[in-house]
Image (cartoon, rainbow, N blue to C red; front, side):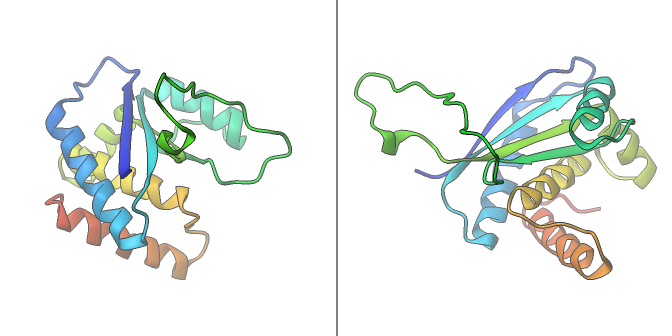
Length: 165
């Protein structure tokens, strides 16, 4: 078992190519190594501003689009989780990846931010992905110290995979 990325493209405006996915997989491995996470699965979905706006309003009560949302699977819930994985013939429970959570990125918003910050769309999506991954692990940026810690971790991973400003 290893750290795995499962991705889905639900927006049609921007092309998501294999080279970007390879960069994100590399970033996932580096971020996982840095945090001592060597197994599990991260689900990544690319959406537009309209979809992320709806999700942000529904799940966070914020009525506007955002750039990235993270939904950790290890957060406590009041009810039993729904089983979403069926075993195939010859598989055991040990073969099922431990799902760390979902990351949803608005590619439309990432494009806007990449132009605003003067760097590539790939760099912005990489930044948002690593940012989302750290949220899955429980990091947050509610104060200056925690924001500085998160930013440092993000930039270290991005520089290791060549996504620098």
